[in-house]
Amino acid sequence: IKYGVGALATHCENYILQLLNKCLNVDTNCANPPPTMHVTIVCDLYEEDEYREETRKAAFCVLSRRFADLIRTERWISCLWSTVRDLL
Image 1: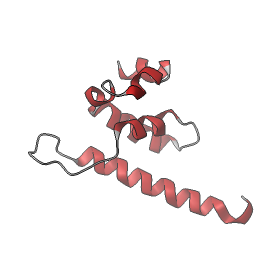
Image 2 (image 1 turned 180 degrees about the vertical axis):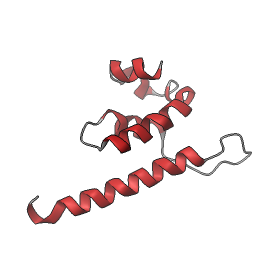
Image 3 (image 1 turned 90 degrees about the vertical axis):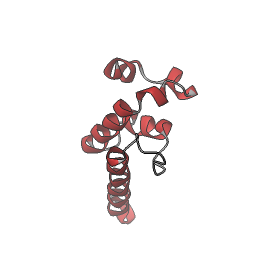
C-alpha cells in the first residue's frame, strides 16, 4: 500500500480488537462497570466489510451481549437486515 499506510491500518485495527475484547471482559452486573465502546460503534464495526473477520466476530460477540442496549438506539432501525437476522 502506498506510503506504508497498511502498517498503520493494521495497528489501528489491532487496537480496535483490544477494545472489543475489553468490552467482552467487562462484568455488566457490577455496580459501576467501566466505560466501553458505544454499542452503535460496535454495530458499525460489525457491518463494515473492510475489517478482518476476527474483528467482525469480536464485534458480533459484543453486540450479542449488548443486544438490549442496541435495540434502544436510533442505530437499530438502520441496521442491515443480515445483522438483525444474525442477532435474532
